[in-house]
Length: 205
Image 1 (spheres, rainbow, N blue to C red):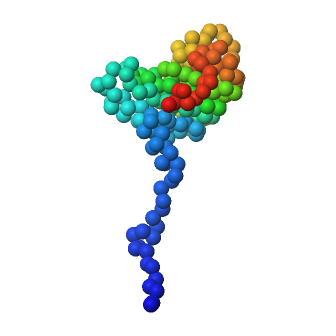
Image 2: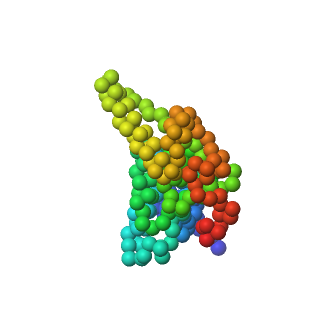
Image 3: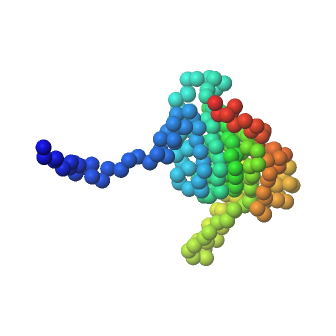
């Protein structure tokens, strides 16, 4: 019997299997669990979109009966504008949002951590606050305006931190000009989180 060569249809030749990470993402998203484990850029707006969609889906459910959104953070920080945009949506969400510092919540990651309605830190996790850095380019007048805008953004970020933590303003001003690292205990002391997550699965499941 002659064996015929198996020929793949041309429209399937370049077909690639889906990224296995996408399956993990959608399985967690179905349970309202989202990871922020990357440097903050425009991609963070996907989390914001999910928060909006969940609030729309929950609009007829009493707030106290809604299934919370859980955001797990291990983040080095990133773009300030996008950070504050997502943080604002988190604070305004009527569906409760739980944030958990899984390992490192630095800079913008700490801002997102503080945006949760209920906030936890894993044992041995760390947080870091600072005023960040802003690059400028263009003419002298353009860079001057950019610096003014960034200064206003940093001031708004400071107001957000104080409002979300209840931290003493003098303590904040004394530490904000450096990279201010905090242990798990410090995160509780200064109001970044409410509790240590003794068992994360009691929170997630």
